[in-house]
Length: 87
Image 1 (cartoon, one colour):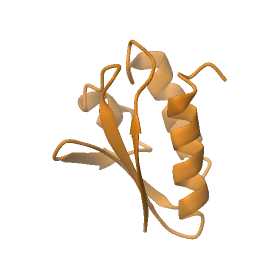
Image 2 (cartoon, rainbow, N blue to C red):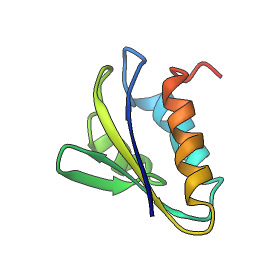
Image 3 (cartoon, rainbow, N blue to C red):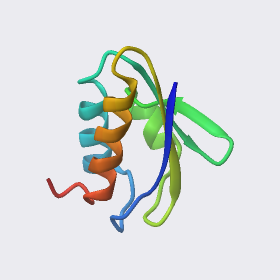
Image 4 (cartoon, one colour):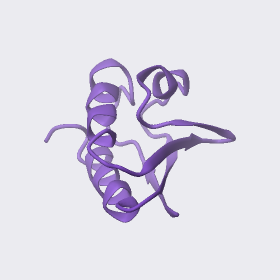
């Protein structure tokens, strides 16, 4: 299991378009991946799950992966979040 915390940099947070990019990136990996905000944890490969967290800009989230490419998955998603979804 590999875990990393990151602050959502873009102003709108993980809504609609950024969330779609996040889900697409998560689905590139074999590992099971979760996103955690406060006490809630959802499947990072589920658009409804990620949207249900209501992640706004400036929010700290935790990305957790477990599997054969867990470290690569977490690092890739953290980089995407830090980029502000501009890549």
